[in-house]
Image (cartoon, rainbow, N blue to C red):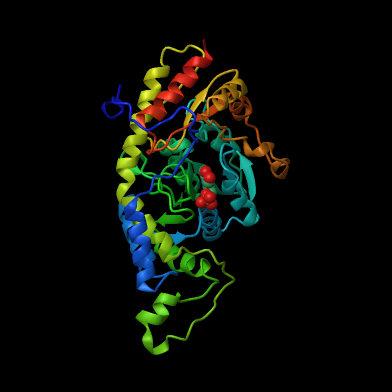
Length: 385
Ligand SMILES: Cc1ncc(COP(=O)(O)O)c(C=O)c1O
């Protein structure tokens, strides 16, 4: 048993429901928000800029641009990659935002199959789906576990194709020591309420290409060539002046969200360590169950452990059994090519078609008490008896 799970904590009653996800907040986040209000500047401003700097440093990229969601990050990311009229190879095993972003940009999603063990996009299937019309590859680090980035980046380089890493699950995770979101052409992050770094809503794009920086800053604020902070503080003489160079959107981050983000970033490694300890404890306590498969971690990956996904034949029965014991469980995901919107796009994905029917996501969040973890374990083990 992991040492910080050794002592069951008091205060948990059996009737208290255990959700699949729960954000972990404290006084520091509240104080940070109070300071923003006291400053009088709530919008896009100095805290957003500071959060971008700190996040870029943490991820290990020269640039980071803060947005109001990962959906916006994926959308703007594909906009600077310019996929209009072309094909984008992607995974079906994701939240729909990943693939909506391709459609927002006038691209055609082409679904590659996934690896049986990690549920990440399979580089062999990416290769099979490459055509003269391929414009980009989008990969999702499912559950926080790195995709096979060596093979993916080699393929991308050989065809001169950009790679967008959807690291919504992967904040703090790494591949051979490099942080997820720093390996491809662009990394996209979500700070949605249930993510490893949670601000309520928020997103970030990370990248090295300097040319993307100005364009993304314009695109996130209506195409305007200077943001409000620059106009009011940096360039006082012409504070009223701005230009509009292209049709942009309204999807930048604000300083309230950034203030919470900086506190959450400082806690991220500790929170992810707690996730890792809970996942290891689950692995250990489920090891003897021959009807349940636990997740694996490849040697190249240090997972951010966003999701803990097990597999079994009677998936729906386990979910109902746990619900009766006030333990939530879910399914991530219905493969996207099965949604009505995505029917008709290329999807030769036999593994995805088969494996999703056996997936169950169990509760995993840093604020789980040892008692909560034990209740999940007992709930699952009780299903088999
Ligand atoms: C893999 C993945 N990509 C993108 C998103 C979209 O994130 P957001 O809610 O910040 O727009 C999510 C959110 O659940 C996700 O899981």
